[in-house]
Image 1 (spheres, rainbow, N blue to C red):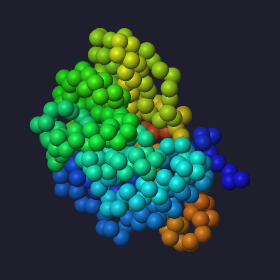
Image 2 (image 1 turned 90 degrees about the horizontal axis):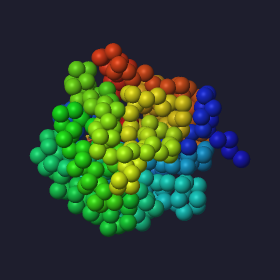
Image 3 (image 1 turned 135 degrees about the vertical axis):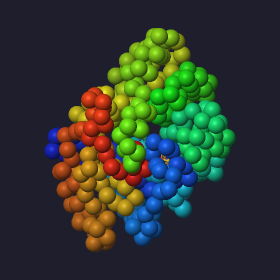
Length: 334
Ligand code: SAM
Ligand code: SF4
């Protein structure tokens, strides 16, 4: 028997978020700068290496695999990778294979994702207004994403919307977005903007719309029931009693969720980040390439998990973005 991955604080690591590219066809203002320098191709893990890496984590007890980026669906031949990961769903080694996407390529790929064993996906949409969508994503087109949503639902994928809560940007769309999701049978999760990337602290604080405020606005119109459902991550859920809808809140800045953290993140170059809010990382690419035997890689994975910190240091409470990260969200995939 292979021993499971347990970190120094007795948390079992069962969830891997794997970024397969740092590239993206959008330039969301809170995520990327307009002029991004992307990694040279040779730095990236090949699809075969990504397979070996993900499969090693699965062998060590990971039950849920989320593919992210950058925009995961713009990586060349990525469907081959999904098809190959599908074997772990078929064998029962993996409970869930899923993806977080901006939706731009779903029209092309939704059917193939379903065939590969994906059943649920997260699609990131912050606004339902065409012009605002173009402004926030810089390069995105809402109609294309809407066609992607249609394709996903037609293919049988359950869709959850992720929306970053942005002050003075989508505050006025809270109820229209909820209604849109209700009509289409989709859940929605709001995310507090996190201090990532290279914009100054001030810009991030300007965008910060605390979800405590968003929730209070919901409660003015609806009665809410807290749900005990936890996913081992920063999301909390409520049910809107009037509509039966589930609404999630990802509040890394206002709640401490670290005690139940079950996840690690691996970038497209094979760096493992054991905490989204800390700079600490280890390299898995060198051990991966050092030997065709998985023993070296597995040892490196265990060593990295052995360094997982207790929690993060994000803090806006003093009016400055403390614990700010210098890396972009697209680097670790959110
Ligand atoms: N491109 C895909 C997408 O947009 O869904 C996957 C990668 S993206 C980095 C993952 C998630 O991170 C998206 O839902 C995005 O809105 C969110 N995100 C990016 N930058 C963020 C920030 N500074 N604060 C909070 N969420 C952020
Ligand atoms: Fe691309 Fe996603 Fe970042 Fe937007 S949030 S720039 S879609 S990686």
